[in-house]
Amino acid sequence: MSDYVKSPISGRTMNRPLLISSLIRNADRYFGDVQVVSRLEDGSIHHYTYSDCHRRARQLANALAGLGLTIGDRVATLGWNNYRHLEAYFAIPGSGLVLNTINPRLHVDQIAYIADHAEAKCVLFDLAFLKQAETIAGECPSATHFVAMCDPSQMPEKTGIPNLICFEDFLAAASDDYEWPEFDETAASALCYTSGTTGNPKGALYSHRSTMIHSYAEVMPDAFNISSRDTIMPVVPMYHANAWGLPYASALAGAKLVLPGPMMDGESLYELIEGEGVTFSAGVPTVWNGLLDHIKENGLGFSTFKRMNIGGSACPTAMMKAFREVHGVDVIHAWGMTEMSPMGTICTLQARHADLPEEDRQKLRETQGHPVFGIDMLLLDDQGVELPWDGKTTGNLFVKGPWVIDSYFKDAEGSALQDGWLPTGDVVTISPQGYIKITDRSKDIIKSGGEWISSIEVENVAQLHPDVQQAACIGIPHPKWSERPVLVVIARSGATIDKADVLAFLDGKIAKWWMPDDVRFVETIDLGPTGKVLKNKLRDRFTDGDAISKHNSPAPDALEQNHAIRK
Ligand code: AMP
Image (cartoon, rainbow, N blue to C red):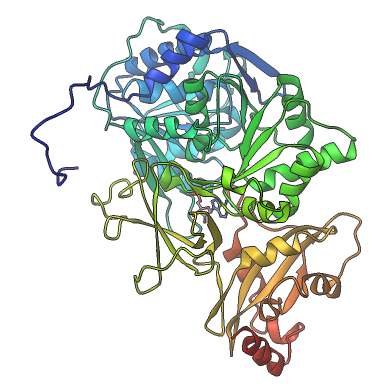
């Protein structure tokens, strides 16, 4: 900030800080009777209103202050998407504390690492995560207060946590008379750790200002298009990148909120969608297969569900088409990262696309979209030379914007940046109109004979095969070509499909030299804690020295030829 040019004349507008507390005050004042619905751990459904949420958030703020916590202190949560977690989303940053959402699906050592690195003083947890909370209690000296998010009757009888507090008792003993404090909008609001596949997680520390600008941007029509007429169901967990900002954007817009708790199976999601009139939802691709299967098996349809935002990993074309063409739900592809709060690009079509043939419109929908206003992009090659936005040239994507981090928590200011830009680690093409297509994560791209094969593209085509439930393409070391692609496939239950079928299906749909050297059938593919395929695990599983030579390795001549064809 400090090296910006200072004008001798300032605007004469009020310098009101952008604070998260304003969101819940707004939701209460203007949409106080709008419902917040939660699925609880026992499967029951809990209803209350934004007014109730605001009252309890004020009680929680008072209760946390009663523990002696003061501005800037970190409070960790281990929670599902539910109303108590939502209260924490407002009470903690609203009162100047920092909300440190921890992903409970991480290994307990990583959970303890995060709480310790964040120096969390207090931990709020859902009962399902008692074990994780106990680990923090044992290994994290800063954490001296633990609150179980449950009723008194549900309190665990035996626990390794001394002086465990019951959330409902904690609230009942606190007054709802609380004035949200005003402080500098650059104050930290939330600390979300990235779930990297190697090394320790790294903390993205958002501010009130960055979160508020992100919320304004998120509701825009070419972003998530959220209004007071919507019913929003964030399937993306509240422990992952602030549930993509949806709890805050919903309170800003006054939209009804439906929090699905732990139950992500097709039947439970369908029950909430139809029962509560959900109009919009968002989540990673893997979650939606169950919902698609459920409606297919039971011959069901949607009556209110109109739009869904899929991101976090590339959305398979087959999934996009099934929702859109069979069930009338517009799938909007999006890309982002924890480091970007997380919204980056969103794929809505524009007036200039209205007359395109449907096939071209579909091709466009399969891209990750164009940047939300506020995000700037740069495309560079490995030497740092700027590349053209022609929709063909692949390069490394860099971003800038008011909700993009400049360093990880506890690292030197600006240390995450290169010449002021954040390297995303994603390899993309950018069209002249600014639509990005993610080719790969830079570490997952398959480098064959000095050229790049997009694992995402190969997977996407393979997943169009009706008998393929899921496909993941990985690069396996090869003595001559450095790496060659191997396709790992989960077949649909009951399907009889073999390697030759898959290869025949791919033939002609991808470049010849992109054809996988082998197709391996598996029962399961390991997913990371945020639903992404763990490709490093897959690579370990299938790098057995001579994986390629043993299995269907094309004769060197053929490969030679394939590379020659490409050139
Ligand atoms: P995370 O910080 O865990 O949300 O992961 C961010 C990373 O997920 C990005 O850098 C991308 O590699 C990947 N990602 C997010 N959205 C998409 C998408 N729509 N298509 C492909 N990859 C995606």
